[in-house]
Length: 200
Image (tube, one colour):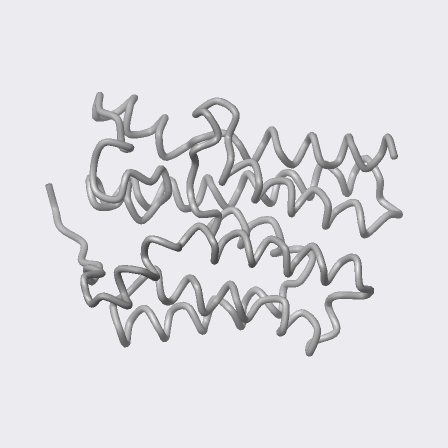
């Protein structure tokens, strides 16, 4: 139980670092939560600054990856604890204690968190994301499809070794999809904007 709590704590604390919020605050002196969708993730940051959006994407993925690496070093023989850390990192990004539990949608953090654990599934899901995003220019829809495909891909590609691992991947995917509820409503009503990079 102690190992589970430590792994979850490491994942959550690293995942909860709000890089998008911090970067926009530091470099532009504004609060990213007051612009666009109000989200602290890379897509919304990119609406203000494409460069900061890319940096946010990389750092959000890196914090999830770092959580898994740290737990891997601490508990090298327990694969399930790495999945606990990965899931907790996604939770930390979506519900950061520093921002009153109002964070991002977890896509980049989920990518980084599961990269070492389900690499084949991640790369296939990333390919799905790119194809859908380029074809339709709806980043939210591409994110939802990619997230939904991840646990299925992990199962089909043999990267979820047991029900616990698959359940944690599925739970992270479900959280990410749920956080897109506003985008889903806008897509259904035809009001979801297509994503375009603009220089400011």
